[in-house]
Structure formats: C-alpha cells, structure tokens
Image (cartoon, rainbow over all chains, first blue to last red; front, side, top):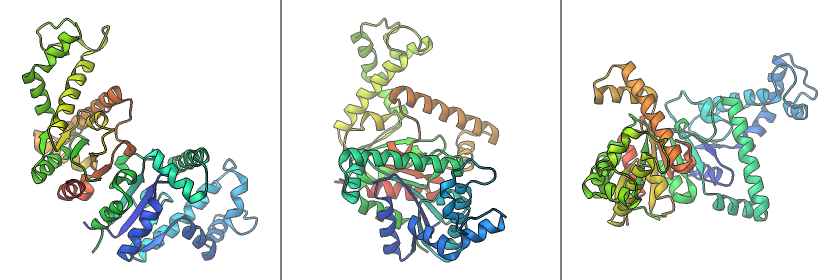
Length: 196
Length: 196
C-alpha cells in the first residue's frame, strides 16, 4: 500500500532532516522535527498536564525543568516523561493527516500502522563530517567528535525507548545511504512510495 | 552516479534472489547466484588451481572435497579457500559487464567501487515463513527453523569473511523490506538507480 506517513531516523550529518523536509514540501505533507515537537509540548501544556496527572512534583510546572535531575530517581525518569509527551504529540499528529516526522523514535511508536513508511538515512563518514563542518562552522576534528557523540546519544536513547539496536535494517521499510545515492534521489525514492 | 553492478544480500525467505533475478532480466544484466558461482568454480578449475598454487594438499584436486575437514586445521581454512575462489569469480564477473550478484559477501568484496549499488533485502517474519513453506513444501514450524538456521549461518559467515555485523544498514546503499514494499516495487526502486 501507498504510504501517507513518513518517519525518518537519521545519522547526524546524513542530511536526513533536510531530506525529510524536502519530501514534506514536495508531497504537501505536514512536517515535524525535534524543534517543532518540543515547542508543541511546551505550548500545548501537555507536558505539565502529564506530570500533574501522574501526581509527580513538577517544580516549575514544565517537564523541561526536570532535565537537571538525571534519570536515576525513583519512578519514571525525565526521559520517560518526555518520551510519553512526545508520543502523545506524534500520535495526535498522524491523526491530523499525512506527515513527515523526524526522529523521536517515531518509527517505533508507529510500527504497527501499515500506512507508515519508516526510513533510516545514513551516510559515509567523510561526507557527514563535511556537512557538519559547514552547518556548524566546525573544523574536521570537532565535526567528527560531534558526529560520534550525537550518534552515540541517539543510539542509547533509541535502545532505552525501544529495546532495539540503532541502525539495524530490519526495523525500517527503507534505508538509504545519502552519500551514495545523493539527497535528491533519496527524496525521489521516498516520494515514489507515498501517496493516496 | 548511476550504478551498473548490483549486489544483493538477503534474509532467507525475503525474496531477495527472485528480486535480483527480476532486476537482471529487466535491465539486461548478467545474473550470478550461489549455484552459478559454485558451478563456475568447479567448471573453471579455479578451485583446484588455487589450492595447488598455495601448495596445499588437495586430496581430490577439488576444493569442495575439503568440506569434510572443518575449519580448525593449520593454515587457511576451507572457508578461506572457497571465499578466495568466489572472490576471484566475482571480480572477473564485474569486469565482464553490468551484473547482479546474489550474496557471497559480494557487497564487501566490491565495497570500494563507486559503480556498485549494494542492496540488503529483508522482510517480516510471517511473510518469509510463508514463502519458505511454499518454496520448500514445509510446515510453519519447519519453515521458521530453516529461516533461523539459514540466517544465523549467513550472519556467521559474513562476520567471518568481513568482520561486519549482518544486517546493519550502514553497509548498504539501499535496504528494502520486501514485505512492506512488495517485490515489484523493490525491483523498480533498484532499477531506477541503475543505468548508464
């Protein structure tokens, strides 16, 4: 079946977010990335509501203030709370119509929906480092450090939320090497699998 | 760049071989699967030549008779010898023109060629089991046993030959879930990346 929801997991520097944004634009789909999802969490008040529902003490009424507490206190960790809020936003987003969602373990959250195309985008190390150097004004050494740290963090978070290993092909409908195929071709391939 | 050589690694029952064969037919490319490569090894005499070159004792002048010896003797194992022969055949094949090669760690052997599209094909467990039941006249339990054993063997062989983990997206240009996308769409996607 043709897909109407696209989730994109991506290695840092692979251009996955940009590819997702181009797909959304080309198809006229809504677009949700990390910034949009976090902003929605704050604006909608879902975060503080959720915390209050659970009867947890919420120092400022905003889940983001929990970030300083670390994850090893009793009960749900901050990551659990934030993940729950993000999950709610993602589940609400897909009910509103066709969309592209970047990261946030959205592939896992939506894994049982047959209308979801789950995509993983990766790339060659040198190409990713070059992109990071340009985007963040870093030298090569700094860019590679950022790349390793960010991907390590993503892999740990993904494992924590899903009990899956980051980057295993079997969890995705489609995995693309953006260095090898080129960004434009990646956009075309994804779009060719979507529609009514 | 457009690709003229396609390597296909695949989970057992995912239809990867059939998809590769359809790609070769559609593009007019040569097609090499396990049977063809092993037959070529026997026919060309590359195997016995190779063993003689190395000064190894070759009981029957044919590398396949080594299979009974296991891998833990001194010097290159049978798997090493067979892998070397297959590598020669694959390297010769790609020099002869555009082709599709199934398995044999061909993605690793050809990893430094920019004209190679390396594909990994996987599928959902139930769909793969169903295909194995039909192809091999097995019941569900037997089919799943075959599936686990075959994929385990492939993973171990791949690790042995390449020091890579089987099924990690980063080693391939393109990974496809044939259950989710359908065989025909997999063929189309691969063909759309190949050509002059």
